[in-house]
Length: 365
Image (cartoon, rainbow, N blue to C red):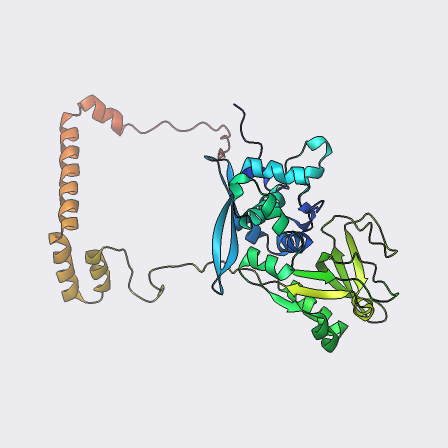
């Protein structure tokens, strides 16, 4: 019986074993609102992705932690993703690059398919009969809802009316600040009502990866398309590269700005815990109350005598005394049984070393 096709070894690629935005390649599923935040999260907060996915070798399932609303509060749910679920995702043309691999010869990085499948499974009322319902329910959506599923927070939205009030430079500055803080940013597009076009595919979500300015001072957004190309937009700027850029002021003026979502910041690592704060000027602590009392009484002879008596009468002190007595008796017995010849040999000084160069000491790793 052969082993599972996908294991934890297939989740990521690269020596650092981290997810990346380039691992996303949306194909047949209309869930750009999901895979764009996933890609941005992978680029800026890879540990969120890594911590959300685990592999169980006993069941060969991947377990994914996502979030759903429970009475206004996020509830973490662990969703199993089976080997059959992953094969089904690849057959559907999901959001990973694995289904695009030449002749199907590459099985990594599979993490986008794992998370996308878990999201569909979370929306399916009866996963036992297949995930058709789940995949139908996740067709089209809002990046803020995907961000909630990934992090338990909706993030901050910038809608067209607010953007118009702020102005393009202020909106771009918010995006730039968010990226500097490690917060994922996604940009949504909509059809332009007039003749002016922004060059981006309409009704689509992009990852925002950087902000620059042109010579006129207009903010330029550096984008990554989750489709992994920018063909077929019908706006005169098609090309096969995954990355592209847009003049935010022109985009807003043309009416193509649907909105943006700024996700939460990175989760801080847990603070180290210890029973009590270390005081370099305080008394030494060993964990043994009798010895700690002895150390604390070093400058008080009377208290020190009392501490010594307490240690001697304690179970620990009695054990130390018994152990010392046993060692002394063993040494006496060994000395009494040694022959004079053995004692003479032991007293003979060792031979002097030769003047040959000594081999270097090595540590075997």
